[in-house]
Image (cartoon, helix red, strand yellow):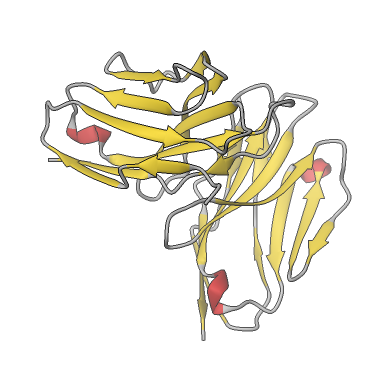
Length: 112
Length: 115
């Protein structure tokens, strides 16, 4: 069975702080894909990144970076110098040979 | 706007009534997905189409739920004899042809409230 665990339900940080959102996954598939989505207060899920199981290179995109470690089945997401506009619910998701499975999300509040 | 669109955005209905939602995917996307999201949870997969063929259905999709995509473009999701437990946000997503792991692009959702 596929499972995604986002242990942090809510996180609050002060603007300009760095914050890391944790994601741990379970799968028996050898080929799988991991995703992060952002859901701002407006409700529409916004795609952030996709990573396949054979590519453990970390990725950086502006203030966002992702750390994929197969050894610990984790795909963590770091926002550097957080801004109020980063306030949203962030979902980690997994796709193997089954439909996309989402975690329960982490609600991030960035306080000015 | 070339994103995924959904209609209506909000629907309030009485228990026992039927409701139908519509999703228009991004035009070049041949895959279309329906999800349900309840408060404090991530989206849960309901069903998936490739063109007009419904290829997969979740156990969550009871007999009261039916989805169609008759011409391989827009899709409808109908819930018959609604129950209070059906109250949720219903999300539609679409993705490009090719690999099933392509990223999915989501619409704004239809929020259903069953009284």
